[in-house]
Structure formats: C-alpha cells, structure tokens
Image (spheres, rainbow, N blue to C red):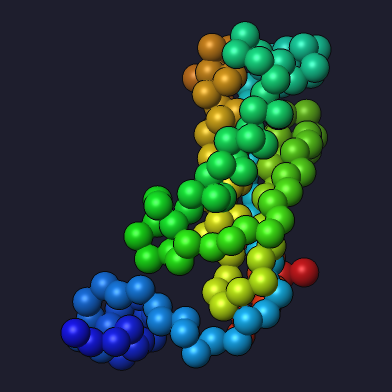
Length: 164
C-alpha cells in the first residue's frame, strides 16, 4: 500500500501513481484554523418582498433559523459527504445571513478548529446546505430562486492564507 504523497500534478488527493488517496496529516502541526464561505440566493422581487413582509417565515417555518441548524449539521457531517475530508472536532461554527440589496440573500458560514487540517470544505458545505435549505423552505413561493454563488471567502491557518 502506498502512502499518500502528492502526485506529480501537485494534486494532494492523488498518490504518486495517480490513485485517489486521503492526505496524511500525521506530520502536520496543530494550529488554529478557520475558513469562511459564502452562498448567495437570488429571489424574484415579489418573493423577496413576501419573505420580508413575513419576517423570513414560510409555510415550513422560520427560514433563517432552519437554515442555520441545517448548515451546522452539514458542517459536522462533511467527512461523511466528501470522501477525502478528515473527520474533525469542530470548535466553532457561525452563520451570518442577511439581505444584500432588494433580492439577494447572503449566507456566510465560518468554521473554526484547532487541528492539523483546514476547514474550507466544512465552511463550503455549511454555506451550501444552508442555501439549499432556504431554497427548500421557499420553493412553494417560486421555483425561480437561484443559488447564485458558493465560494470560499477566507482561510486562515496552515500553509496558506486566503482572503481577509
């Protein structure tokens, strides 16, 4: 069995023979690590107006509160969803959900740990599932809701820092 070494391409989840492999983090230093990811939903103007008028409640309940719970669960289960993610002891998970302009709902998920590997995938998963939950809770109002963007905003700790 080969150890997980980077393939010649530099991709970290391939071994020297180009086969899928989990990254070996045994030799990495334990450091404080965090990542923030964003997901944005674009609503038809009438739907955005209705949600504001209903204090972000739909027929299924409190939209923002439910999205936070679903996103938090997703963060904790990322290693079960993404094959080469390490199971992590999440130390912090927060969400900021607010309107940007008239019809864009912005979800930012920030995840923190002290460990040997980063939490980018956990933050991206949390933001994504929170956005999917908002869609699910609001789809009775319209199927024209668009999850417009999911991306990493920032990463701290480890070898590289990304964003602010």
